[in-house]
Image 1 (cartoon, rainbow, N blue to C red):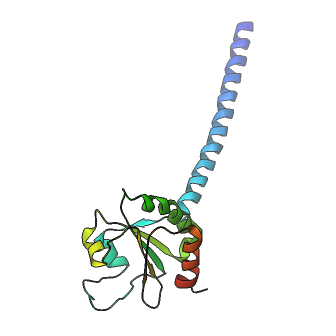
Image 2 (tube, helix red, strand yellow; image 1 turned 180 degrees about the vertical axis):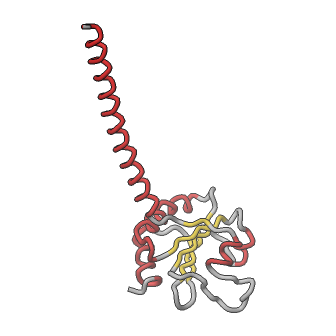
Image 3 (cartoon, one colour; image 1 turned 120 degrees about the vertical axis):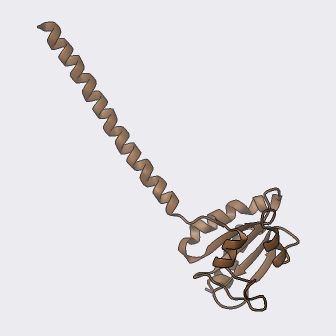
Length: 162
């Protein structure tokens, strides 16, 4: 009888501690999922192919003489290459800006090595080259790496016109 009571007591202790850990793990998993969703909800830069560019940004093949932006909010297009040092320098800045400005602007990235036709259509000879596209008016091109403050100034004054 004493052995049975001892076995039941030990078994009860094991099950209650497993349940406690399971509950803790469930809470931790729920928190991890919520944190992941918050991170995923932040905007990120968007990599485009030529076909996507023609649909989302401008179809320069259909309208070769007229610029017509197809987006629903201002955009920055970063023409870059994976081997380019200055491109690597501004990449995290662009990610930060995409998260910071969220649903106010798009930040697109075009790999000039993979999308040579697209880079050629815009006369890209130096990278990084950045195309700032306001909702109204002509886009503006900038070349070279810029500090975050210069990007923010361009976003505020050219894209958002504040």
